[in-house]
Length: 319
Picture 1 (cartoon, one colour):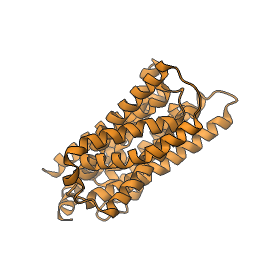
Picture 2 (tube, rainbow, N blue to C red):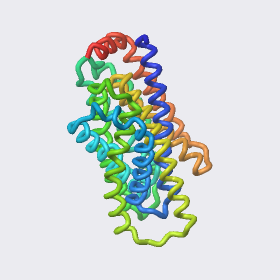
Picture 3 (cartoon, one colour):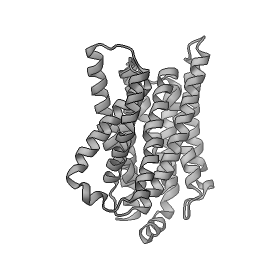
Picture 4 (tube, helix red, strand yellow):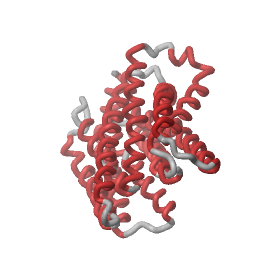
């Protein structure tokens, strides 16, 4: 496959992952009667169960090359990219709203791209400045819009939601960087299998999380609410965790970290689009400008990588 072909396929995988991950921002609204801890426990118990079922026929062959070091890495990746991240994300959505949370998480591309620019053979940071400025501009428009729409008298709740969103940002930035580097080392493990193995590790952690969720969340729920909770948990587990993570891992293998970072903008973009559908409204002028800037940021970043793409991929294949 040519360098340009790998780039286009990688961007397509990143876009698909973002479209599926954007659904995660709606989950706390769809099951708002449940706590963030309960939502995380339900989602990741389902993720672990589905992942284990899909791996069961091939368990020995897939895990033959997975040693203690790899399992330890999977455990930490599960905490950073799944359990801790989702608890913080759901808390931020319920306390501060979808728009504010997507604003903070929207800085993920900047963080990941800046870190990735230090990798050997990466595109120099100065060449990525236009893309980063466009992405930051899009986030700034959404931030301004969310502050304009903030309800008076809810400053303390909004501040707590902001802190949770910042924690989610830090957690997922560490996951994106670390996961990408592990995938580059483990060429013998496919991207979908790595996602499923992450699901098994996450599911094991979710058992402990479920015990804590049951002890802390003692509110009674109607049968219809439990049906919705199970449906949301299963849907997010399959679409976002299993399928979305598989596409993300594929993109992480095809693209350098500096370009992978920009793919996270698709999650913010689709989260906003789903939010508009949920609220049954059209985007405002500021939101439309933000969407245009985010798309321009990704296009500019892809363009910045094009001249060196062939060389970087040759280095990847030799590693």
